[in-house]
Image (cartoon, rainbow over all chains, first blue to last red; front, side):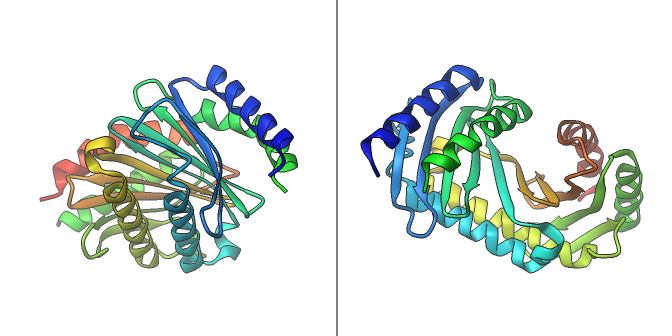
Length: 130
Length: 127
């Protein structure tokens, strides 16, 4: 990916950090192979860049679950959230080719607010991730 | 009797939550439906429960990969599709509560708040 695009993605993550309560980190990986595009994390044991394949696997597994119900009923997968003791993990599919993961502290995060903030960045992300 | 109590509670809950489509309580290990209530012709609660169990098993597998000591217990899982939103809560480690919501008719935060208040009632009924 071009350096200019990477810089733009970094700027978006910086803006997310400022606006998302409890923000811990974010990463983007290619959905097919889980190849990391970019990652940023405040937690040393939560390296979002190197765990791309895990998130890609997670997203693909959840997409498969939708096929049991039937996509005509569910529509396409847009996002998922897993709330655990310490962190909340949010994930979005971008253009069905990339997965973006945002991690936030469970005690500080606000699900609705985080979804709204990320939705605001989505057009820019779609433009940058070709 | 347990099944009837659960179903009564699911029905009551479904009527209170805007955009409710299907509500189920099931057994985690087997995906067996203990009770379900559907407000839709297109999704049957019997079909819905194993899907939720599958989603939880994927999440648990993920947690094992990343390390339980880092992530801790799963509180709830939300999966949003264009038309449908699935929200799942584990109950007493052996069971789960799952709800499918119509994305266009629901208010997610309100739905989650109503469900969370009701979870202790389900846990009290379950063995």
